[in-house]
Structures are given as C-alpha cells and as structure tokens.
Image (cartoon, one colour):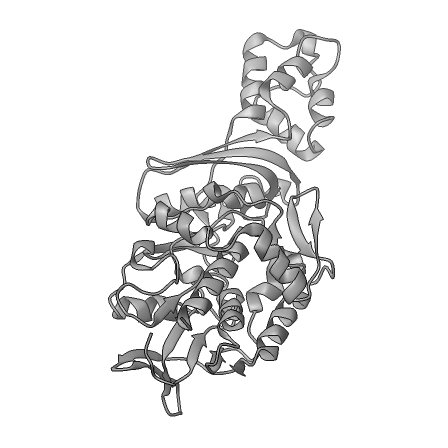
Length: 408
C-alpha cells in the first residue's frame, strides 16, 4: 500500500462496504465511507422479508457458484470462520442472533433488518469512520501514490487505497447500477459475464396462473448442457411463473443457459416432501379414490391440476387405476417437467451472478493483482451462494478482508 497519508476510501455502504469500513477503522488512518444513497445498506433493509437473514446456521462452502477459480473462492471463504462471524455480530456489533430451526437460518433477535443495518452503521461511526452519504462516485483513476476519486460538482478525493464495494446489478432501486463493473473493466479487470441469479422464472403464456399463491416444499432439479443443480425447499406459484427458495436456488442454471443461447435448461420437480417410494405405497391398489390420497398430501388446487396433467379422473378408485395411468401419475408427482420461458431479471434477482474474475484478486487481502492499492468486496466478485444468508456471508467475509488489507 502507498505510504501516502491520504485516507482509506471505501466506495459503497452496503453489507460489504460497512464491514470493510469497520475493520479498516481505528488503525491510525482516516477512513471515509462514500455512499450514493443518503443512508446505505438498502439491501440489508429489504432482506429476509424485512428481518435480515444474517448468516446460515451452518455454512456449506460447496454450495457457492463461480465461473472463476473455485480454489480462490474457497480460500476467501476460509478467511473468516463462521463461528467468528457470529461472535462479531453478537459481541462487537451488539446484535444477538437466534437460529430459526425450521429454516436453518440466523436472524437478529430483534427480528428487524433495520437493527442489522443500524448496528453496523453505528459501529463504523463509533470506530471513527467518516460517512458521506448522497455522494456518487463517477470515476476512479490510479495516481503515482494512490487513487483519485471523481465525484460530480466537487473536487476529486485523493485516497491512499480504495475498497470498491458498490454491489452488482440486482435490485437496482437500492442503488446498484453496475458502476463497479464498468470502472473495473476500464482498469483492465476481467469481468465474467453477469446475469441475474436467485431470480423467479416466468412462463408465457402463464399456464399455471390458476395456482398463483400455492406454496409447498419441493425437490427441484435444473439441468443444462453444462451444469446441474438440485435444491430442496419452498416453492411458490406466481401469476407469471414460479418463485420460492428452492426455485431461486436453481434459477441461475436456466438464466445462464438462456443468455448463452444454449438449449433450454430442463427443470423437474418432486412435489411435497415425499419420495417416489412413499407415493408408490400410497397409490397401491385400494378402495380409496385417487384424488383423496393426493389431496391429503398436496394443496388441493395443485393436486387437482396434477391429476389432470396425468389424465387421471379424480373419482377413480386406486384399485381400478390401470398400471399405465399409475405410472403416469407417479411421474407427474415425482419428476414433473416444469415449463419455463424466461425470468424476472435483475429487478427481482437476489444477487448478481458473474463479476470480477477471482484469480485476479489476492484471496487473503482482496487486493487487485492488477492495481495495487485497490481492494474489492461483495457482489462485484464472481461468486454467489444460495438463499439463506450465504450471500451476506460472502459480503461479510470479503468486506472484512478488504478492510484489513487496505490498512496493512
């Protein structure tokens, strides 16, 4: 890092930027946090239905996705152990967490996203960070002893080192506009193709609109010519298509393939928390009617639609169900081909897929291997995880490493 006494400047006061500021502060260097919105942390505020899933209860690093170096990604994730992250939030940020047993997620005891954003903001200020809201950065230029940061209608800000944590392209109303990608590409960094990830899928025409609002647990598999992903969890029919955690967790397979003009990814669904063997037992010959058995285990509207898809009359007795019809019904219940045509894009995506190639970043300090004194954190980087606190985990880890790296 430069020996200049200019400040350390962090651009972006989201999850990653706040962690970078907190960990850079208090080390004999002025730390300035620039944010284009008045307050920052907008994605924190809207996360988890307004409750903010801070961390997963247990972290499975194998569930992260990257088109870059998987080895670099694993090294980064090892940079801050899961239990140490939890201690930071509870002991340093003063934010007690609790496990939601049904989902395996850690939420603040306060059960409010604002408590998370405000606690991190307060900790940054308490450690001496100077916060400048409503400050848009429009340019980033290396100088002989640091960086020059251009802002509209003002003198450029000189920095000894910069942490860039401006987010990706998802949920643009929170302030993410892709500035970081543009700036880094201009500086010579490789940007892996970006795409909306963890986003609802759509079907046009919406053949299942009659089921809008129906939700249930499922196991879903997405398969493209280059990737396969499975997920188990909640599924929701919408007026335009499908959503829910399980669907979102595999949506990137469909989106990435569509944008690459590959053959359409195939999605298959096992409805409910039941396997094929269980259904075979329930559908064995008996005096019961088919509809009764299926409705007992699935939402009624969905059960009736699946019976029609299988071309099985609802009032058929299981004892009278022909073998071929039984086979069709089992297929519909346990490996239903889910049609889709497109997706909801960045406006509803939880995160941006793609981003800066990880092999161009030092995994210990998050410093650019191309431009010394430039550190990257958060959604700008080519990695994301499933629903359930994984993407906050990535932001916390990379933000902390970048903040520490900038003041070394």
